[in-house]
Image (cartoon, rainbow, N blue to C red; front, side, top):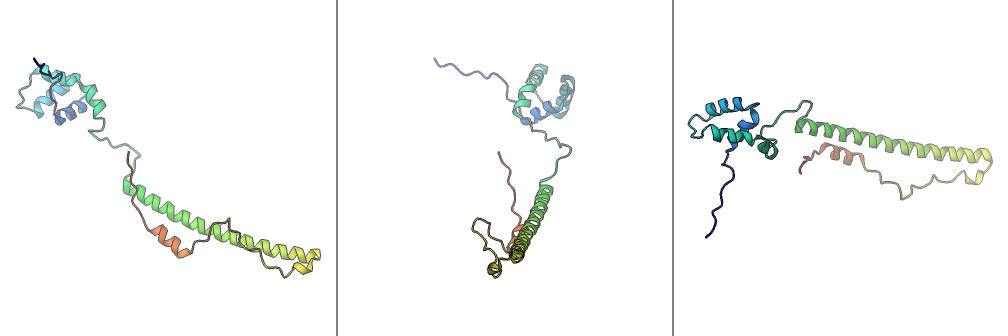
Length: 158
């Protein structure tokens, strides 16, 4: 003969689980249970068994009642902050590139003046040093503006 599987626990609806997680003690749960489910056929024993499984429900459904944390920002606020940060970083990048170019020009000018003062006049007509290939290519300014204005959604997943 086959053994019929016996259910260890009774089936508990999601509304009952939410109610269990909202209540502080068993008396409050019992009173609220009878108000929310007035036509229930469950007795005190069945309702108390649901309360006893409270810790199990809390582990399985920790976010059934989402609590708003203080200090959290909405996704739109975060996206706006990231867009602003991207814009600022683009501006900083452009300023640093411009500063680097000015420094190269100053260095070339100082090198020429140094050669003139030291008497190496044959090198005075020398061209400024060419850009080496290990530097990052300069991105045109219009491309930077387009890149900073385009906002892509940030997807957060598990």
